[in-house]
Length: 138
Image (cartoon, rainbow, N blue to C red; front, side, top):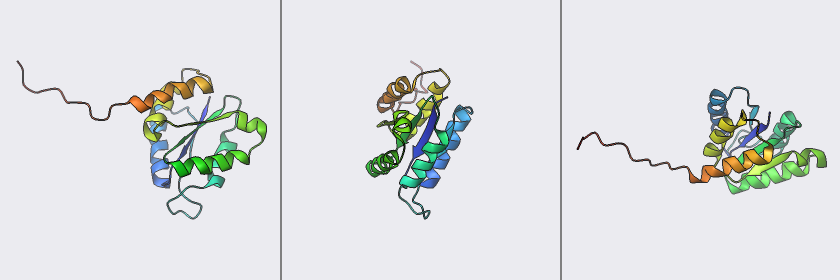
């Protein structure tokens, strides 16, 4: 199964999201790589590298990030991997939470890594403010 690395500037946010993803798809290998090395807010290329190495497998690994500098940390982590490992990793620009939820929902479908990335790209279109149905009839 494809692995999922959740990169956030907040360790608590990444860990909480990993918990939600696990409740939706318990079989999905997911690692939270949030926060800086010293526990403060920030990102850590080393934490991301360790997560990628932990999840490295033939099905591949998907990285989801929260903000732009998380992308930079993930890119540094990717540079530390072998060429073969890098070939099995994709990073999505989908929103972190919505992308992770879609990844969990779609993970069990047996999609390829590239197909999963395409599926979670739809997360950009998730409406967050859906009108409630009216309580009044007629």
